[in-house]
Figure 1 (tube, one colour):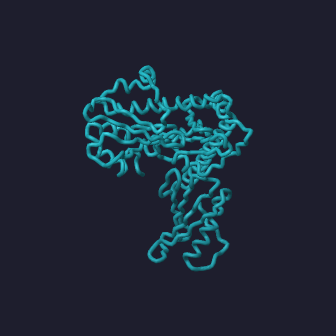
Figure 2: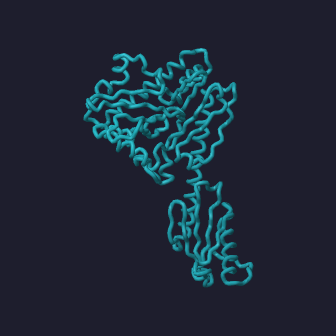
Figure 3: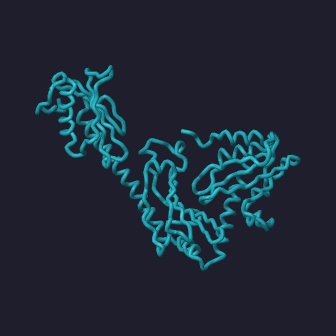
Amino acid sequence: MIQYSVMSTENLSVLSDIAPPFRPYVQNIYQDLELGLCKTKVDLERMGCSDENETQFRIVLPYCSKKLKWDVIFDASVPWFAPDFKFDDESFLNNADDECILQHIPSLLKWDANDPKSLSHVISEMINLYKLHQIKKLGEDESSRAYFEYSALLGNALTTKQDIEVWVTGHLVEFLIKLKVDTSRLPELYNEGIAQNPGIDTALLLVRYPNSTNAELILSPFLTKVLGNITLPMMHQSGVLMDYVPMVTELLNNKIQDILTNDRLKRELLAQLIVKYEGAVLEHDANSAAFLFEMNDFHWILQIDIGIRFPENLPVLTLRSVYHNNKGKPKFKVLTACPYSNFEMYIEQQVQIFKNECKGFSSSNQLVNLES
């Protein structure tokens, strides 16, 4: 799996062209700075012609469903000075005074040229201020449907200001809302830590006005893997976010709980088989087990693989003969339709058929006793 801290070839190229005094700031931005509800890494773009002593570059920042592009401009003649910025939104910080900067971007006035995190601190504070800037734009029309939805949603105990990103342009308003899903046990279930699955708990709802019926669910890669395709309930034109957000949150939490319940059933089934046939166990883990059985000089291995969708998806059983082979490989048979009920009876019947196939004679009514 590619780690997020590894720079792409393009970003490495941008970094190598930046003047040496400013490279630590850029390196820290890319490796450590995560912004937005998506917790996405910042990207880099080159400005102008390639020059190994460039003092300008562009950072690409995640916000709502957008990519903000801000230019960072250092002065090589005074490398200990804080950089200047140019924003793709000309209304942002166009009349900012020292009081505003001191209140919202103190790291800019207290710039420490010896701290490689200095630029990251400034950008983080600027993003927070940009969010306030967008909320202010939203409040300029308090009679709008979007403003009503935003205000009402904040009255819901599930959602705070920190859980919403707002973006306003013209008559279009966009909300990106973090859903409170409980994923605390999923890393344990999938045996994959947060380091390998950044943003593991990220479930976001993207809603646009005036077309709020086209709500979109955005899941982190890990949750997409775990939950699969999720069909959102219909959001009617007359519906409100303060009702819809809890509905979608409950849908996801119920889905996660179903997965955890299914995992418990899977572990219980494996535990029952391992205890019952303790002397025949070859190996086992949380998702599979292999057993060695013998009946009338017919030795065979039963491999049980149980996926994350159990019992919705049935276990996959593989029968392998110990002595019979086909083209130099052990003869095997995969059973994909194993019923959850009458589990052992089904195996006994299939083993008798498999035994006859291996030995080359027709099947009989004799059943293999797994207790043997």
